[in-house]
Image 1 (cartoon, rainbow, N blue to C red):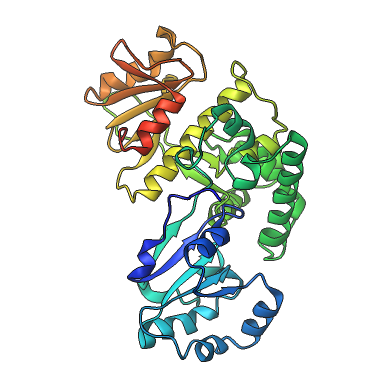
Image 2 (image 1 turned 60 degrees about the vertical axis):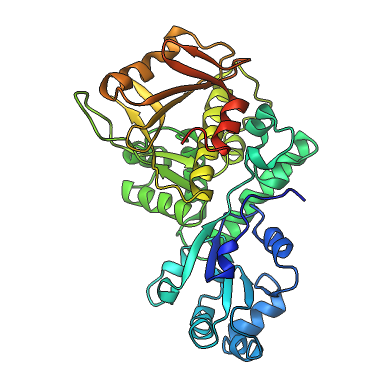
Length: 382
């Protein structure tokens, strides 16, 4: 088993929500960390049916537990009514719960008990480079970092696993919950969203491509976010003199999804498709780093109406990062960072490339991808 960075240590002191998209490894992690604790898996049919019919059984079955003991309920979103019993057991018996799930949507519905701040939020991301021995950037760009995808033994196996992943998501997260009226239109939307992955979101253009209205497009993006399948990266908006685009950028939570939806495979450095997937992978790693370290620094991007851009801005212009999948950074690759530096002269400037060794080039740090990732996870970037 791959040793994960997240240890869910908060559960020793208080109750915890553990969220994460499907197949990020939540169940495997919890069984590994808490092998002897009471474990309710709501994907087990008999457990689900028993507690769905009578949620109060949970309180009865845990009556003998002592204060501070940890109980795990996996896929809590399947029976939100259990949260009333959980609330009672937290306040009356002092039990600590780990409540895991792949969707926060059901738990946000009106009338659902959200425990009144009595449970902290943890998120399990796909694998990250710091968890993988002999991490291979090209392999990660092609396969993504969901455990079963990254470790697929062949392209054929990877494609089958991706097809199953998308099918199960559409069937169990979307159709079963009746989140959309027409599954076919949502499926088409996912493909168009993949085309705009890492790009500024234009709701009207996407609506035209999908044959739906812009309001529906916004709702569909909300569904992707709330089921943890995607996220928005906001624009950096503090401007000195240049007019800035303020639309967010959208990314799927793992690069394997746009790869599959766009039929991208066998990607190699030098192609545009590799460059897009490479940038996505690096953004994915930064998001996981900020999440696992409870960082107060924000991630945004910078884009001017005149065409200058920076892929990632950390904090209030503390660090500006460009991702280039070239094997040797040249002067032409510095334009965006130099323009950003004119407005924010104290910013640290970094280009993450496929260069062989780190170097300093015209005031910009050029870091090979693996060196950048190593420094990121060692706390040397932000």
